[in-house]
Image 1 (cartoon, rainbow, N blue to C red):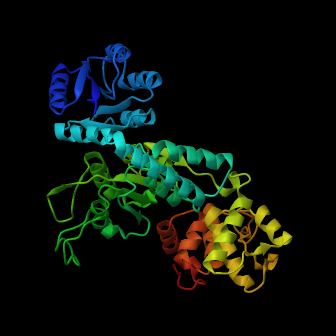
Image 2: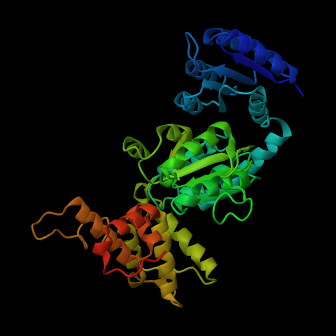
Image 3: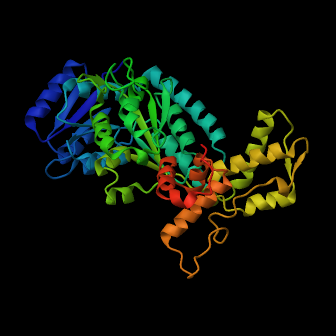
Length: 461
């Protein structure tokens, strides 16, 4: 096997010498450069497998060097070094094609670990992972039905990021398939044979959040009868999906940021640090930047999570995909309930095609499943079997102004929530999905407007 060649770029002479000697002792062939211009000259003369560059240097910045180097040598791997508190620059570097970043100060062992992870992609192991990745991506493409331009762009982004090991932020309206994207990213990565775990941040009680993520020691709090690993430890080496990350308590956001930066955690009730290697995929259906402006979400955590964003389109934006999805779900439910594939009457199909689908794919799936069940032994789904929430999202419906002709925002919010709860038979999860908010937000709104909801039965879900 040929010796791997590394180029180290840093304006700190002492650091260059230390890194060169350390990496050469690990068996690498190492060259050094003091700035970006010198690094490009070296790259023009010699071939390298990996470039390690500081981001803050006199003259040409590390970002500019990365852009020029990647443009001229697209197969060159890049690992960037950034000062603590400069995560934004590291995020920019990742978006420009850097494989990973490391924050100063760092240990040589930590750096060597990152380098080894990069070179893991070489040789037979990489070929095996690439084959598995292609098979997994094909499998997930079959799950993610669609041929529209919007969906093809999502497929393209998944292909780009799956193997890069970068943190992925999947955003979009409720019901658009964010979890499917997260699973596709995991199964297309070199972590595919490791755990893929999910936590719905909106469903975890605030008092148990830290323990759920990071674990606890016996006796750390009331009810902690034994030592317990958290999801980060359970997921070591794999991928953790933080679903609805916008609902994570603000007090815990700093602790999560620290774990992401240091790749180490401390269980509740302990002082011992435990190293972890977990890839994060986060999702949200809310405007995180607006939450940052309101002081509800940490900007530094957002930068750390938003390394590679993937925006999912609503069903309305997926031109031409609706008939494909309808056919897919009808076949799926036929297999699930062991019956022939149901046909749609022209009237039923027209209803489905003309509806606006505020709940997106999830609403379409539930609507068709209910229709299949309602038909019983009938071979055709008629219009009467299609139940649509026409009172929401299209104007009119149950939302009416007060006697003075003016409807306040609070009035409208209350009426929309009431309509959603009635449409879903007081099922909180479905009502939240219909409204495009989290279950926790809906629960808070129900408590806030409790006096106005006396006609509701005890909410379900």
